[in-house]
Structures are given as structure tokens and as C-alpha cells.
Amino acid sequence: MLRAVLVANRGEIARRVFRACRRAGVATVAVYSEADRDAPHVREADESVLLGPAPARESYLDVERLLDAARRTGADAVHPGYGFLSENWRFAEACARAGLAFIGPPVEAIRAMGDKSEARRLMAAAGVPTVPGSPGPVADAADAEAAAGGVGFPLILKAAGGGGGIGMARVDRSGDLATAFASATRRAQSAFGNGALYLERFLERPRHVEVQVFADGHDTVVHLHERECSIQRRHQKLIEESPAPGLDPATKRGLVEAAVAGARSIGYVSAGTMEFLVDAAGRFYFIEMNTRIQVEHPVTEEVTGLDLVVEQLRVAAGERLSWRQEEIVQRGAAVECRVYAEDPDKNFLPSPGTITRLQPPGGEGIRVDSGVETGSVVSVHYDPLLLKLVARGADRDEALARMRAALDATAVEGVRTTIPFLKRALDHPDVRRGALHTQMVDEGAFR
Amino acid sequence: MPEQIKAHITGVVFQIPTKTGDRVGAGDPVIVLESMKMEIPVEAPRAGVVTEIKVQEGQTVQEGDTVAVLE
Image (cartoon, rainbow over all chains, first blue to last red):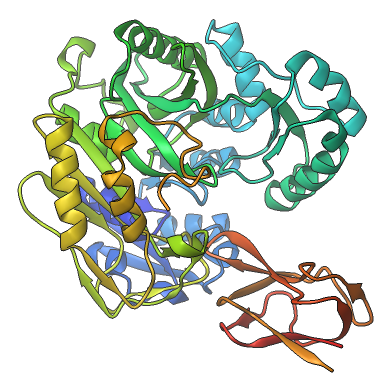
């Protein structure tokens, strides 16, 4: 097993990884910025190292300082969490060169899936259905125009070098393509240092369904079933659940088989997620693979009873997967709500500040993964995710009812949060009956 | 009549797409703030000429701070 894990992250995911380390009997090292001196994740680790000033590029994104912290504390492994450097293949490579186990997939898998256009090409070659789109990146607006003929309108421009919705633009007409291309390529360039774009058909009201995969370094690849994550704003998820309500069994079978085949084809190791869009007819299309633990992994843990992060530690230590496919079953249902410091009534505008009071919920079937506590300062420098509420039930209705009560029992004062939005969403008849699609928030369903 | 353009949110100045003397229309971004990984433009409330920019890239501004002056 590993000796000591440095978590190159902050907030709730750092605390989540530390919990797994304690379960596995592995020592923990926290890193932090000057803004996070008093953060709970720093106190909970066996050792902690100050990286630098608050801006992420001088702290959580500074590879040299992270490697130095690992050297100084004797850590033999690095867990990147999600965001920050988690999908940066150069960081994974730098860890390997420094003799540290990177708790995640091989460098080549991160690199291939990080190039979203290359990922589409590789998955199509492995027999995984992809959204109709340009075969590769397009060089300029004229190139985009030529490719648009084969893709059809409406279409969506996407950054080849990144995700998270940055550099994406919907284009309804040929006449709007040149302007949209210029603006999206500029944004992609500034966010990812790579202005390359590719085109995809824009699907009307699809569902977002993803499959959790897990592989060891000994040729075993399994799936841990699906998660439904259609309720999103700015292409970022707000509510996730497992199982996906009303998913046709044939579609489900196709999804998990495609996900396992896709992961196997690139020699994947550790936890990963294959993301798909599913249309009204049950056809599904690969959109991207996240080569890391995801924010919403707890819903999978709650329905399978398995600990994904402990398994990541074991696999990083070279062990075989401890589960066989037929042992991995969904029992009951689980739902997660993300509480962000954002004002849902002002188009999810960030709401930094100090949390003057935090009252988390409790009770049967409720799990809270929080990065903050009363007195925490919510800084402008980082992602606005405060905490995740997870509710498990014998079935979907029970999980949703427990979540609704948990939202009522949660108090966060001092910053605005997405809680009022989450309550409205859970009260919506279409959510109650499981009729979900990715455009619901933009269409104003929960105002 | 000069008008102060104020930040509507706390953030870090990410970009300054305008310079002193620029003519802007209502709703044009005068500066762009970054807060919690989001880019948020501070827009001109009306058409006019930017007579002063009071911030620099990388600077932290508080909600309500004046970031530019419009004439």
C-alpha cells in the first residue's frame, strides 16, 4: 500500500480523499494557499505545506511547489482531486519523473482524452457512438463553414483543449458562424492556451447520462453503472442521481458496454467517467471522458456501497481491483445536490464572502461532503462549490423526499447559495417524474 | 456628466478591453472581472466616452468599487 498521499487540492474533495486515506491506513499531506490557512482540509491532514499566495497559479497550480512539498514531507503518492491539475498530463508526468505515484490514469490516457477532438476520434475507432461533428479541429471560420455542411445546424462550437463549458457557442445559422467562431476561439485561447475548435451537432433536449468506469493495471475494466446529470447550468452539473430514471434497459446495456470498451481501448487505469448524451429515441453519443474522480462520485458510492477513492489508492499501489463486475449492483437510489456560493436569482452570479453560519442537515440516508464550516471565507480565487448533499433511499421517491427535507434543514448564511434553486428543481413535476433534459435550466424551468 | 462605473461583484480584474478615450455603447464590457473561475463583464450603463480606468489587471476589487469613469 502507499505510505503517504499528498492531496493537490482543497475544499470538500481534499477532505474526501483524506477520509479514504484514513480508512486505508495511509498518512495524509495537505497543501494550501495563503487564503486557505484556516481551511478545514489543512487541519485534518497529518502534515500540511503552504504553497504560496491565493491565486491558484501561484499555489494549487504550481507544479514545482507541489513536487517540493511532496519531497519535503516524504509523500510517495499524489491525489489530484478534480479541477486544478487533475487532467493535466504534464503534471502526471512530472509526478512520475519525481518518483511519485499519480493517483489517476496513465499519462497517455489523460493526454488523449484531454484533447476532446482526439478523444472523439479514438472512441469512434473503438466502436463508441459519437455526436455527428467535424472529424477534427477546424483551423478558421472558412474551415468551420465547410465542415458545418456535413454536421448540420444547429451546431455547437467546442474548444479542443478543454471542457467545463468554456469556449462553447451554439450557432443556429450559417450567417452567425464567423462571429461565433472568432469569439469562441479567443476564449478558448485565453482559457486553455489553445484556440482550436471543433464542431458538433447540437442535440435538442438530450439527457446527460454518464457511466462510471474503473480499471486496474491488470487488464480488468468494470463499470459502476450510470449517473443521470441533466440538470446543469453553463454546462456544469447541479443535481445528479443514480440510477438514471426511466432509462430503457437496452440503452443502459449499450451505454455500459460502450463505456467499458472505450476505457479498455485506451488502456485506462483508475476511476474515470464516460459522458454521453441520450436523445428521446434512446440513441446515445459519447461526448467526453473525465480522467479523474468526479464531483458526483458519491451517488455511485451510495447506490453500490463501494468506496471509489479507497479503490483508487489500492489501484495506484498496483493492486488488483477488489470487485468483480457481477458483484457491482445498484441498490435503491441516490441523489446529489451541489450547493454553490452563487445567486440563482441573478443568473448564478458568484457570491464570495464569509459564512457566518453553516447548519448541515442530518438524518437517515443523508451524507454531507463539505469543504466549509461556520467562519469559512469563500474566496474569489476558487471554484464556488461549498458542499454536496447526498440522499439515499430504497427507491427514487424516497431519495428525493429525503433530499427535499435535507435542503429545508440546511442553513448557509453570509453568502448566497443555490439552495433555493435546488428546492424549486426538486419540486418541479418533470423532475419528480424523471423527465429530464440538459436544457431545462436555460429554458427557465426552475425560475 | 461623468458617471462612475462600479463593480457589481467582488473579483479580480481579468481583462481591460477598453482604454481611456474609447467610445462605448450601452452594455459594452468596460472591464472583465474574474470571480470563482467565471469571467464577469462590468458593462457601460449607457453610451459615452471612457475618461478614466481606475483599476489594473490582477487587482482585487470589492463590490461597489468604482472601476472606471464614463463621460
